[in-house]
Amino acid sequence: MGSRVGGFGGGGLPADKALAGVPRLLDDLQRLSEDTDSADIIFILGREEERVFAHRVILMARCVIKLEIVSLYKFLYLLKLTG
Image (cartoon, rainbow, N blue to C red; front, top):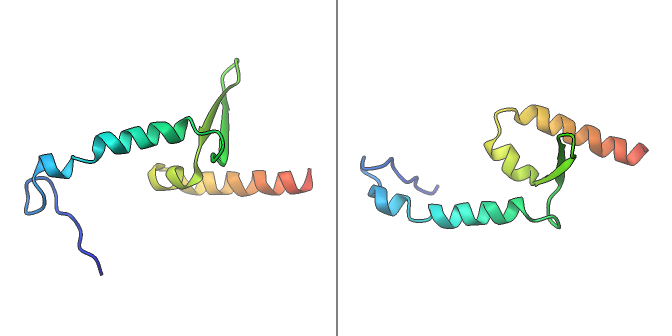
């Protein structure tokens, strides 16, 4: 098993080292939000029907309503197959 990085300043990496990759992570997540080719979910929002592209794996990792998203994804997939 691998080891886990400890909390900030509590026996793990110092806070500055632990946060060193955050700017790049934010850039990568921003790039994903603009990536229309690999997105597997599209939210259509508002009266202007603005499209927001998403990636199921990111939503599954970060969303508190995971089960609802999985159910919706499966429903839309089945609807696509039958429609």
